[in-house]
Image (cartoon, rainbow, N blue to C red; front, side):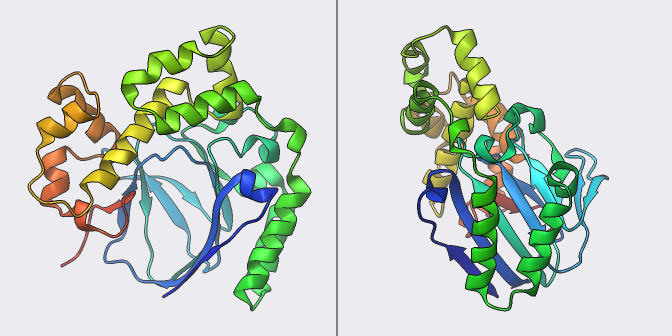
Length: 277
């Protein structure tokens, strides 16, 4: 398998979390659950395989996507297809980074997967063709960078005060959430509106997502996990609240998660639900 992660420079590094490319992916499953991470993605398939999203409960297909699509901010886990011999190119925006490119309130694409052509027109299909036809991986990244620079409007960067609150939520424990929100110089309603416009989700939801992803990192490859202790350390009111949120974000309760050895997988945000063997 080929996997390349591109190192970005300013100004794109201020808005893009990562750009990566892979080819020859051969998963041991065909359906996987994706944990929300607080990022918006533009995803290019370069292999001609149609992708599906599925109902989280019934696992019946509820969407199909080809060429390029946008995956907005999600509050819950997303169930998607995984294909053999996949070749894909992915742009992952920082939580604060998508608005200067999309130029619409980010909450309008919350919990959605949207055809890229529907949003960007033929322009994004032209970019996919350029990436597909470029033989050098570095050239693929250069094509994407040039396209992103042509779409970037730095004047639409989120206000400093909202960015400060977001930064605090990303790094501070949940016990300090009220204090962080109170530090915002305007009303809480104004803050929520700013978050929805520039980042997609509310401060409370982002803090919950960041906390859950930190838990996944903490339990990765760990043995003899004590869920009650983890729930206490991460500020949950009680263990039932912790279990409910764990299932909301991952689709599994904590014990199911451990029994399936998901905490031992290399990936901490993608979990197969029909793994073979």
